[in-house]
Image (cartoon, rainbow, N blue to C red; front, side):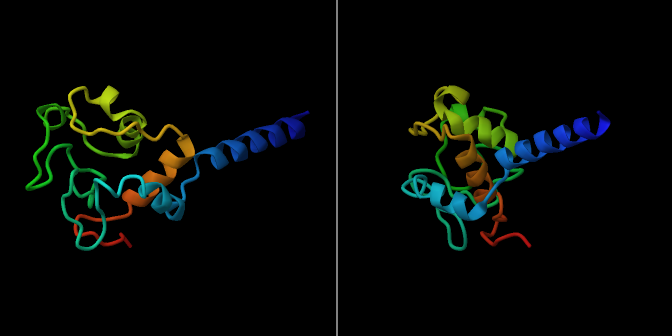
Amino acid sequence: MLKRLTVAIAMIAASTAVGVAQDAEKGKTVFNQCMICHSIGPGAQNKIGPELNGLDGRKAGTVANFSYSDANKNSGIVWNEASFKDYIKDPRAKVPGTKMVFAGVKNEQQANDLWAYVSQFDADGNVKK
């Protein structure tokens, strides 16, 4: 009985891990829908939206030379995996009054992969080692 329980727990743990795995390469593909407004990586510049280098740990509304909405500047968000995934599902619901016009990434796996991609860049646009 104990052996069956152990196997069952292991199978549940393995299936859960698969559901939350992150793939930066797949995230790069998901980022294609963001590229019209955002840039990331070496030489990234503000576009319609701010450049996204160094996003992990950055306070929302703080990229230099970008004109943010008051809603975004005053949101109190500090970007991390949880805040990003919550925001990216529906930006206007998370921050009413944001300038960001984007329907959101509803697919959880795509959001996971997108986070893996954007969070790998440091503030200078280099992939973290």
